[in-house]
Length: 317
Image 1 (tube, helix red, strand yellow):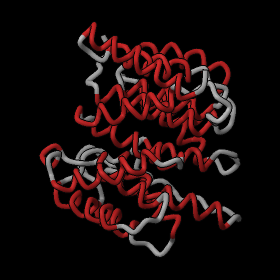
Image 2 (cartoon, one colour):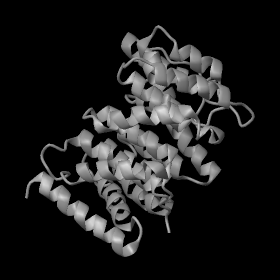
Image 3 (spheres, helix red, strand yellow):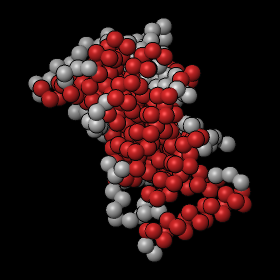
Image 4 (cartoon, helix red, strand yellow):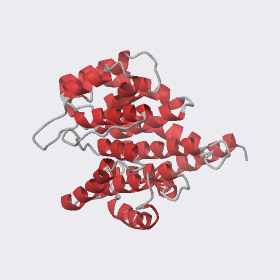
């Protein structure tokens, strides 16, 4: 059966399931099952991304069991241990335990002989850990120094205590830097910052909308603008413009742009986006066993699954 016929058959089954059940249970289950399936992917970072999506969707007990198994294989392997520990931090509800996992990543970052320092500083930034008060490392390799400093800039934007807020001055200074790596990584980090205040968010939104096509920088800006939107701005005219641009990117064939677009739509979690995401999800899912679905497209399918479940209002029972 060719891909088109496979897609038609799957669409027919799902459409009739909706007619019988009056909900999106069937397609939701397919998306959720795909995330669990990807937890066993041979591509490590695809596995980690699927686990992070499951955490965000509230499947914490299941993830805890998954991480207990991963601990045996990855806790002491450079780079992979960072992905494992990052998931532990995200999934842990107990503050003391969470801080112990953060401390493990911090110790890896602060050890000059660690082969995965860049992975460590990136994950600390993703976890919104400010490194303002941590001594800055210097490397002989100028390229490594540059990337490390880019992630440090991102971490400096994060609040350094419960009483502080996002450092918007550093944020906009970095987004306007002459250093392309600083700009790119700061734009990428936007979506991890949480909800912004109204005025700085509008500045980010305008920048994202008006940014000339410069992939992946422009994609990161759009994804960040949608992900950090304050609750009171969800109906803003900026949002329609941002989502229009992200939908265009989502339908194109560049994996990095597709991935970012679907993560952003999932973070925003607007049920109005469900039908669009479902249609695109079914297209890609219908050929997921084909040779043309490489590791990047598999990762895109995970992001689609996450977005579909978030926009459907799916909750763990």
